[in-house]
Length: 413
Image (cartoon, rainbow, N blue to C red):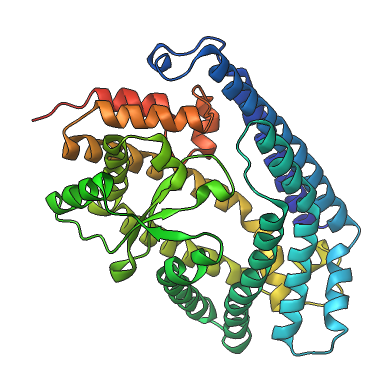
């Protein structure tokens, strides 16, 4: 049997077993007794609901993963990629347009297979636990907009990468890497003003106590805010969130309307201070730099497997192509991606602790940040006792209990 095929199948099966094991560990780590520190936020009914939410979403995730992984393996073994390639080539276009059709068709197939799970997750599970606010009209609108944007942005990026790899040889991966990063960075700047408003309504925060408090705090921290907005998160979900987006003159702080509704002014300032801490401590810059390096590594390794005959034979392909190399390389790269993902999660969790500390020390209060974290956990039905191994592999944020414990150990100078 083809060695590449053995490797790909082994990776798929190992990844599925690892995912299944960690999720089972996570379910077993659910504790029947509410941690003492949360008893002023959770009652018995709320805590039971949060545990049931974790159980239902985890079991659904396991089922979804098992089905989609099985379908992927069957698709590979039956020569599905070759069938799609022949379909793409039947239009008799140049290699870049053929590659766009090939990749677009695969993405469309994947989207269609995932759609029933998305529908069930949104309109059954999230509805059952009181989160879903998405109407059928909004769901369809989001789906259409997402497909159009994905086709435009993804098509541009893929065309650039294909052109470089087909035009140049030894340094093609460098040109593709740098160009990919330039376009990605450009999109990051444009997202707050062009892309995100297509899905949500952003309204400048109205004058009042909250806006005054935010502007006062930002001034104290010598932090220039280009805009303070509320987002109609309640249009889709009752969950709470807040985030910074954009850079430079496009930088803005965004609060979900659900967060403003549920939290006090002091708690919102603590959340803002946490997000501001990421900027002040240069976490955003570090993440961009890390992403830049890991993307470069990906393109370099890709260049080593370009147009590999044995790799194409593993996927039962009749023709070799650059665009096929990109798709099949993703299967080979997944173990490296897993390792890099673990490193990025470790780094991210460290940054979250640091941003929490910045929030507490800059606002000179421990209680409001702790209270904000408790409310976020309660309103989002967070798992309060995730398994350490599950956290190690999957969590970009530390478990809330660890965050609170770390905050309570902070000493003011």
